[in-house]
Amino acid sequence: MNTRLVSKWAALLILCLALQPVNAGSKKTGKVLSCQLGAGQSVTLIREHRIADTAVYYLQLANDRTFLFANNEDESRGRKVAAACLGDKKQLLLVSGEFSSNYLQGIVLRYNPQTKQTERLDFAERARPSHIYLSGQQMSVVIPNQGHETDKPFLLYRYVSGVGATDEGVGIDALPPKDQQLIIRVGKTALIR
Image: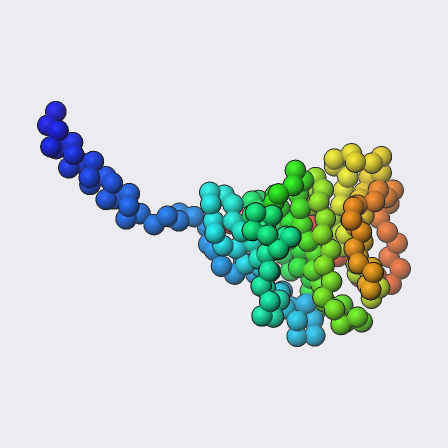
């Protein structure tokens, strides 16, 4: 075969590959969704720096943009991420996916009108949340216990206003009582494509 012809074809192939956009056929980057948290507060979930099926996720609150986890790019790189704005007039943001842990990691973010503070609850379990309970004093996330961390059927993560969040889920036998709490059934949150 003519080496000159092979060289021309190789050069043409390299040129074609060089002109292909790096993200050809990949999913969108930028703003994923925005939630109105109440009292004029909003939060935007942003994704950038795609590599294969992963991206780095950020939160934008007012003019403050931070990595989703640990203020660190590596910890905030995720895949199979699901996110939703939940609730009626006062919404909250739920994000979960495969990040730096062997578990699904996620956050729930809300604005509490009683404390006039944005509250964040982080969790990491083998399943996504099934229920979120809200009151003026606390926010709780209930997750089915699919990893058998305890002998209880559910795991509860709690954020208490003025105190902060629990570090780990606590096993519970039944869903919490409905006492003066807004209950949001999460259902299936959509994977971000």
